[in-house]
Length: 221
Image (cartoon, rainbow, N blue to C red; front, top):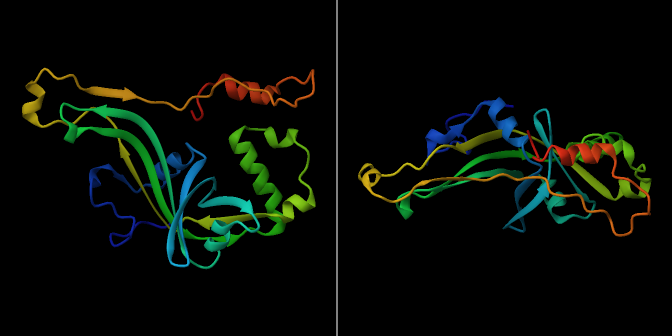
């Protein structure tokens, strides 16, 4: 991953005390989710679409139908803007002006390239295993028709920055002397109960890998 230059579009100006440019920090945030928002343009108009992603080394992978508008737009040579955000808490201050949220986010930029057919199935299996480890090995193999209808793109991370807020409210000094309660409501994205497919054949048990995934309760450690 290339170093971030001061003139880079990823340089954080407002709230620069929350900026993080270290590769390890950026990758840690990216590896704590699998949902991103992708910014791109179609006929000069801006679009932002949520989609699943996978990080491998210094690249982000996306997949979609061969005729997917976003995927094909990204392959026209434009630079994609991708954002990942995790909400960690509501920061409730002593004034409305000082209310905030605790969060971790990464914004990155890069140009998309097509993943070759010989790599496609392996990458798609990696998508599945990133959601639930080992799940891909339990599934039927993708048909040639399914693979041919699927487009997978690699977006090398050319520029990236993280922005992170943690901690309590930061009120104005006189407000600390008031009787107004302030604090943080911590938030987590947790794993819920399993819901069987209504068309599941009778007698099929929940796979051990899926049950183990649910038992850990939180999406990412």
